[in-house]
Length: 303
Image 1 (cartoon, rainbow, N blue to C red):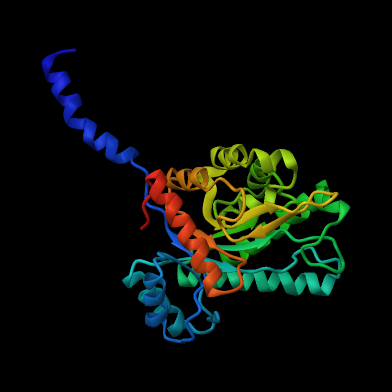
Image 2 (tube, rainbow, N blue to C red):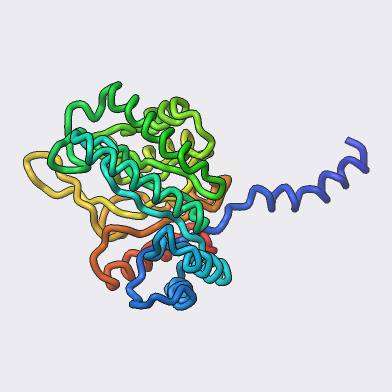
């Protein structure tokens, strides 16, 4: 190496390191402020240390409220992480199934209009009584084919330009592993189809519970290029004569948050990490504080 090459390499090194530096995490969660004012809602997220939010209550037809919400949240650097759909697109009843797919389509249109990172649903279930419940056909080729058709129908109807349509992995329905999700992504074959990652949803065996660090790393290794948003939960093993994992406040379970946070910082986009499924503001305060402590211990910062 010549002296000139050496000096050029040294000069470029800081920029190379900067490019490889972990990105800050966008943490978010529900808020309990009773207000219809988008600016007040946005400020409340920032007061709590959040830089990501669930979509506030707004209808697709409320174009002015959508614009005001989008602008107010952007003004304080809070992204809208997701618009939840949460309908069974595989309901056994044909009329219900049709209505559910139409609802999910409208929710994707809202997500695109408000600039959310994604619209999220689960694939659904063939269970006739519980919309997310267990059923033997939930792991079948028919289930995969129907979900691919539904995802294409929803995406092609909206043609989103600002958001992605995502499906969460589930313990007893496809996609139930990172490999199953990659297979689904390839089958859907739409750039607007992406991943909403909820690690707890696929920790469904003792082996995965004990090695949830490995499960987390596999998810990010295989799905990282498509991850649009993530959920923050925790799991505890309840002593019984059969396996029973219960969702608990982050910090009260065994999910490896140091690994989870580090992997989020490596993503090619700043995918939000959203607390969910807790009951009170105090529970969310506890979960948020735990994640912030783990982040401080592992050198992870927040946006």
